[in-house]
Image (cartoon, rainbow, N blue to C red):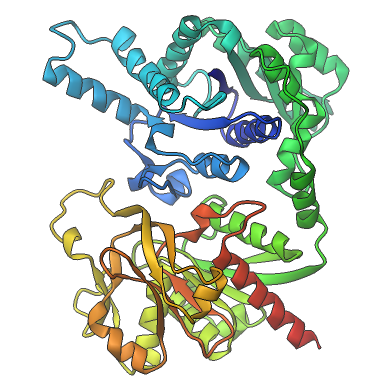
Length: 540
């Protein structure tokens, strides 16, 4: 296996994850089998207990691992299916080291950062290598920036690892910032020079430098960076701001032939140029669509760019499949509690209520679901969005006044959504929800089954504690609610729908975690198709 390590410097949020994912795309389109990995130096064991304000979206894998949102980019940009082995945090590293020390695995030795902690980090790379013999290239992104105290051990581990496997099998890529100083009218290379100098102090010489820049990279600055950072000029690559979509990033990096630079460094130069025709077609459908629809995303974290990242990307995928631009209107559901729904969301073509935790903005979400149902506006509920649709239907159609989830009101007279029985005995919060891929049964003849091409079973990823309360199943069904899917093992309600509406479907799982650029998730695709049909009818 060959190895690519992607580090970052100067500031965070430079797009290391997108750079790594884009390189994965280019190498995969050259015919190589690629696997992605993320090292996060923070001390949390995983991001599952972190606030969206701190971390953004928590991305869930098939095996139930709660991971960094960059793993979403990895799975969307490449064909690899990742597992908990593909995300490592300092919390996991130190937890493993302490457990080994307590068991006596170190045979009485003094436990130290080097070699014991660095060996633990390297062991994750070796384990992924040994478990994926058919993979040609492992791309590992290191979170944070060079110079961060918590990242030093990871960088030291990579320095050691490169010596162990041979430097000809390793490519170090450093992503850095080229700021444009408006007052001076100049792009400044000094932050890049300082960042690379810090990396070299640690003992790592980058092979390729990716310069994040608003403008293009002129030859003088390319030459200056090459000279002061000890790399060849051709290995200084521009990573420009894209105009329309993150899916332009592989095409942008291809302009400087970064895939060629990488394969030459790791001895895979015999591979053919990347076949990007299908990717380019997808990008063109995103940039130049024939139609457009307006979708309201009604949530409590709408002011955060990354809180619903996978949902926004899944809407783009579905839009491209229908040659449609998605205009997203972010609705803070607390505002819906104090203003007219007609005024705020009366103009949209579809309403999506995403997942979330806590009672803030819940009544606003219920109002959004009610408005969608009563006005026949396509409604798509995800996780909490399904629970919201259930509560709204119970209150306003079944007459169960005060119906609620026990998450929001433990004394509700009608707990149509309640805590899973096995969750009631838990005393900790981390990694103990219903997590990961679960198989569900689809009922024939439902609208949902048609969207899944009449499959009888599906597998989707979950992340939740509360469930549809089956005690109220008959009451809700008598009034027209249709249960179109239940879990194969426990019989838990997975999808509900209202066939009386053009599209009123809600699911307990997170379909956004399985959508791809050229393979949109069927529920997102059906939602956008319904929104487009609504708009076209109104325009006639």
